Image (cartoon, rainbow, N blue to C red; front, side, top):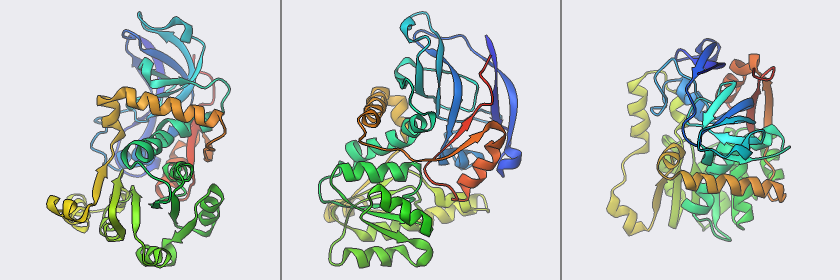
Length: 347
């Protein structure tokens, strides 16, 4: 068994007291698994939700969270491909990413050669999530009107680019003037700043007599009813998060209020109005349809190499800045992908 170091989530709450760097022993590689010597790992908003105790998929504490890493394969299992040893890859992991060494499955990696670590980490969770939603779930079409919440974030910036490649009309929702410029530079057709007023009214003004075809919503809560009203016939609401819940300070009462704000949908109403609600949990896709995840990852890696997409790296932090980066991500003060670099090469 190999010993390494990893940031452990040891308690719920603020980032400053939630993590500790501890030693950890890795199990023996099984079958065609690979061992990656990690140079950097990525942060995702789901990590914030796990830290706050709102992510039910997270392992019991103390645990190592994290979904993606960039590094070099140093070892493979007994039935693994020995030619992978020495290859620089981006890899998915089902938690465990905040570590100097990570074991993952052979099908959960893609060779990236000299690609920038931040760009590669943008692809693993955020661009793969966006690609899956745009191309497989919502099946965005030319000319469709699309609303993207948290448009300046990692998934949001990916959604803008992928929706524009499909020929959609993109309305990007953001929270600041700086983010307005970013999303417009990425190709968004129009922008709404919810700090300037009710975003529903702003979107209605932009739509005129039209309605939305797709809403990509990682917020849920009160935004659900608003988006539902904005959707037209054939509209699809894609729910892939519940970040509004992260503001709750009252435990179960906050959760109940979160559910109350979303209301209830009667299934027959979906048929009568020809509207759809699509729930996305990429961990479940990874568990039950891993080859789908592999296909999406390989495709976005090739899209970068072809110059079709340009991931936004919003911050590169050193390992002792993890807590600060977590806090900034939680506060919505970042854009694009945040990554953490280890100070030195693993032993």
